[in-house]
Length: 319
Length: 294
Image 1 (cartoon, rainbow over the protein chains, first blue to last red):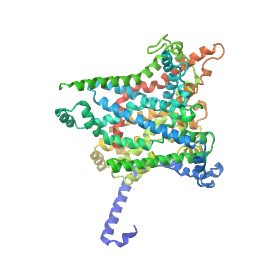
Image 2 (cartoon, rainbow over the protein chains, first blue to last red):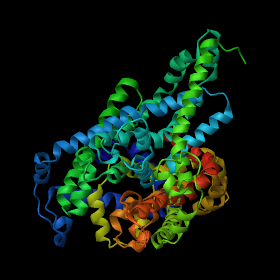
Image 3 (tube, each protein chain N blue to C red):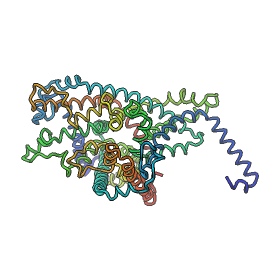
Image 4 (cartoon, chains in turn brown, cyan):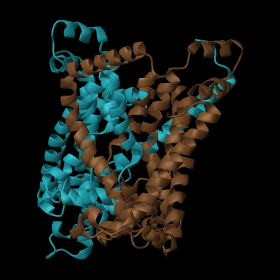
């Protein structure tokens, strides 16, 4: 704006013309602004006001003095968290579950899509799809409830089988060693079908001529999968990988909370459940806000870094 | 078709075997729950019931329909789902239409404002404090307003408006003197029924399955949605009030409790799973449209 005066009068004239044209467009479309205003109001109130509220992480929140009036304490809460008894346990579990989910949960839908793509019998394909998509619609409460029933040490069907073959019943839900595996496998069970849709869509977009040509050259099914299908869906894989790595520390907190009990705490306590416990149950708002902020900043940084690396290496990125 | 090589035939056999196994692994627990809910709880507990109902009866269902908590949870969930979905749909259309217009000045800035929240948010505690300050704790609205719209669905709908409705149609209407709101109600919406159906489905399933906001913000049991009642029955095992304490022995009581669990699972999923096979293609369509842009 400041250098407008330095420009020649002709340029200045077109500038004003353009801005008049712009105002004209805004004026003509005033109804659109009216339409979208409730949505913007919603986003400001329920998304950006809480972001403003993050400052209590650096303050000692006193309810009567409000967010603004509470005294600053700097990084005290963060220090207390980093030096606290639970810090390493929380980090280990949060990262552990995140990485485990990524390692197992990420490739499975890709493999499933590649396999389904090879099925020529349409009816069979549709049957497999219908069944494997279904668990996506179950609530987390239901999935965890089903796990509890099937894995119950006395009545669960899995333990019936174990005992039938002479094994000893395992109390899966209270055994810390089983927690992460149960979390990851039940997640795979619930989401593999649904997550494969996006890869199936990408596979459908691959040019059939490539396959024809490869077939003429005598390529086998496996060779065609390896040299045509997988490279064909690589951009999709990378985008989803970025998103998944970016959310490695934001694991399905609701499910962990439901699966958590006093006995498996050692391997089920993650940052998000700790925030819930300290903040909502113990009303230590400032401290838990600090812990939560720590988690979301790591998430955000991870996403940005992975996106940057991917843009450099493979020219595929989110932005 | 070409003649398949031996390698390809082997590949086919392995492929079908894996897919059949995967399907069975997904299907079996669901069938088991369904069969168990119709069976004599005793056979289920002893591990005698493996696939088909044994000692067919409907006792568990009778019991849960006599249960006050489940009925009130069911009613609450119906209210939250219908009201919530209505607001969600309205808000999504209100956002998606202006954002789909190329001549909407400031659409990139507004889009950025909305998309940023996908990657960063205030977090649990500041949001909780906000809800508390707004006086929304323990009210019906807390189940509806804080999730009034989802950016994901806005993107899906906006993409549909841009790609499936010819721009010339809107231009012609403008020349004929149609206002923007009229274009939306007379032209865009009637042409967008498929995407509106998808949006309704996504939101409705979300509301039906939601439990965390209720856990966080609601304290009166009469306001609990079904999922929270389910959590008590399935996960915390608070089924005591449901089975009469007085006459029956503890073991028998345990059996009934277990029987109820299966029936509760079926009832909670029934609306979604019964509709699902018919709606599947709409859901998939929604994911596809989202994927193009995502």
